[in-house]
Amino acid sequence: MENIDWSNIGFGYRKTDYNVRCTYKDGKWGELRKSTDENINLHMAATCLHYGQEVFEGLKAFKGKDGKIRVFRMDENAKRMQKSCEGIMMATLPIEKFEEAVKMVVKLNERFVPPYESGASLYIRPLMIGTSAQVGVKPASEYEFILFVTPVGPYFKGGFQTTPFVIMRQYDRAAPLGTGTFKVGGNYAASLIAGNHALEMGYSAVFYLDAKEKKYIDECGAANFFGIKNNTYVTPDSTSILPSITNKSLMTLAEDMGLKVERRHVPIEELSEFEEAGACGTAAVISPIERIDDFDTKKSYVFSPDGKPGKWCEKLYIKLRGIQYGDEEDKYGWITVID
Ligand SMILES: *Cc1c(COP(=O)(O)O)cnc(C)c1O
Image (tube, rainbow, N blue to C red; front, side, top):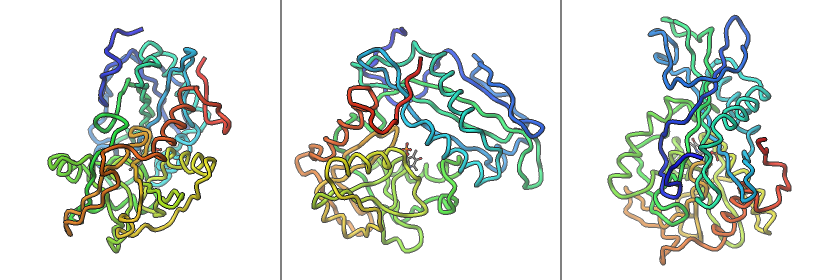
């Protein structure tokens, strides 16, 4: 086991032993290869550099009390990556190959999976890039799929505690997210200015409004939104939101706990009616929202006056984490044990 202060690692890159790679060439995928090289040797005319033919995913592996390592819903990440690739004319990786690569990279870096007690996990970052040379705006004919891992702690400061978020109309959600293409590099680059601005003002992130009317809540930079009122879990329905696997799982768990679940437009004004709200995603898990300030109207929507996570946020958080770490029964078949 690596000698790291596991309980105090943040969310950043840390070198591990191996990454796993696979090359698409002459119309087919080759074998998975392991590599110790952190660098990529790339043609200067590669399409990923010029036209943003680049997609990525994010998932996690958890070490349980029993010492077993579990990966959460990797088939969903495999499918979503295929969709992202289709949206920007990249080759698609078969689901089985994706899963095989995840198992391989976790196994190869076993000593970097944080211990159960730390509450940390191993973040798995798959990416695919167009590598062949092209100067016209055309898709590449060769692609590289790479999978690396890095141990991580909480994404937003402090882990499971409330933080403030902000709405700022001057920032638009990057356009291609509205066309059913997700986790595509360029979109995130376009959100960096907004994210930075929010951080400078002391917020965790910007919540985007729908790009067309600026009336409804969409999501923030790396997490979906949900609000809870009258025993109902409400989450936005929009084509410019990334279909979060965490959110999908929370909807299932919420229903199981007796909450009603609604996926629909959420007008900004409705924020004043929620008893609790959270940002959710693989990296963020559930980040309970203290308040959302509207930068333009100066209105403030407060969910947690005492700074504590609400009871449903807490219940959902405990349940989800319980399944991921193997403390709770995996009754939906979301877990793959790595052995
Ligand atoms: C990754 C991501 C999420 C969370 O999705 P999960 O599948 O739950 O990790 C939400 N929004 C955006 C924009 C993301 O990139």
